[in-house]
Image (cartoon, rainbow, N blue to C red; front, top):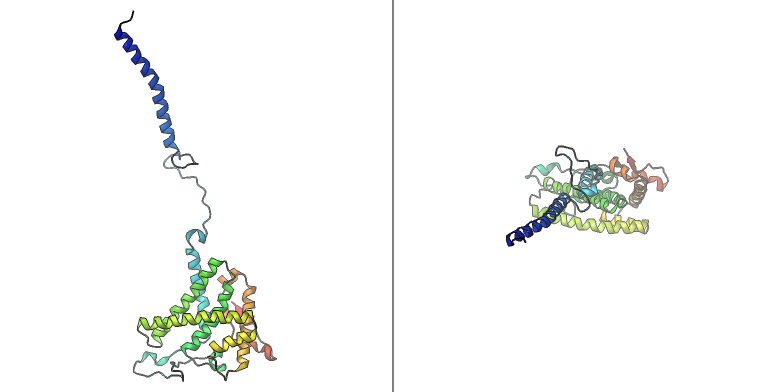
Length: 285
């Protein structure tokens, strides 16, 4: 008969033999779970530390990085477009550099500069900041209408960038040509012009959607300041110029608009409506 001490030793050995397999299985489970914690659906990377990862890299589009690339593209593309829009009724004020000399004024109290070209010489508009800004906004409007054919997010970026160029240039002219050194004064005028721009969008859109008479009325109010002595021939030329320019822009695909230089021809070529031939109001370099 076995002693009590032998029976106790035997029970101890039996317990240890039962615990050992459980411990080994538990250890394996822990190691296995650690090996697959990098992804719920992907096994851990078991390659050597110096090996290059074999991961497929999908192409990155501007949308994937928040539109940054699109913004840079729009900034560069609209810079040249804006210069083309701003040149048609541009003006200078030679006496602006001399603070002791009083600048000449128009009957409306505007600083009168020196200009040239169809808008000043043939239409008879005064070379002032107001004339320049209105003619520039007219050309920007034509491009803005074409930008609406872009995808919505691209359209918004291009419209914003060309307006940024316009407002930067306006603020520079206010300071250099008209002596507006106070930032607060410039900002007040810029806010007023932005309100005018919103009104121009609505007025010209209405004219395009309805008929030439409505469009001519909008041009008369903005470009000619509702002058009762307006030259209706010139007004008709501008209406025709706008419509033909939009048709030409519409015929270009998006990449052409973005990448190729756009040059507007003066509306004097629209005498075709009055019995003589004219030329394309929009040329592409």
